[in-house]
Length: 219
Image (tube, rainbow, N blue to C red):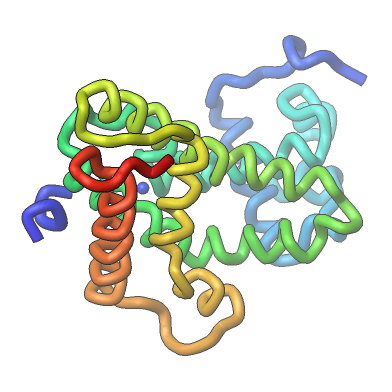
């Protein structure tokens, strides 16, 4: 409980990557069109028109539609989850894992993330780059960031983690339990705060029972 209380054909260099009003407008327009029409049915012409810029301006920022989808996904992740983008504090594992778990489950329960996931899953067969883009912009970044933290806590003697990347992925799987699949399938109501806290508390307890230095060696 204390932890719960204590605790989200051009070359690349030719594109403008810094945030500007025009770039932000393009990303917002693309995001809305992807959500409304799907990835396959959204054209660069439509994005330019919705953003009220020329198609040439769109291409000055993004090499193509796949790059725009990645920008949308990155924007979604950065705006909804600090834990995917910032170094985690070197504090006790129970506290940090609880904070990470709460932020993660709230993020993946949001309408924008669920819809974007459905788009990537539904259209990844026709557009294989979508699955890779979604994974790199969201799950991979979260796993890498948590794995970095786990290495630090192992060095501090609190955890025994032979494979930090695998352990991080396992933690997120524990946190999701059956909540995420029920949300994707539209089964039952969205989890409330109590549901989220219960799932995270259980995940943290199970994770630490396996990887805590006071328990059995996970190898």
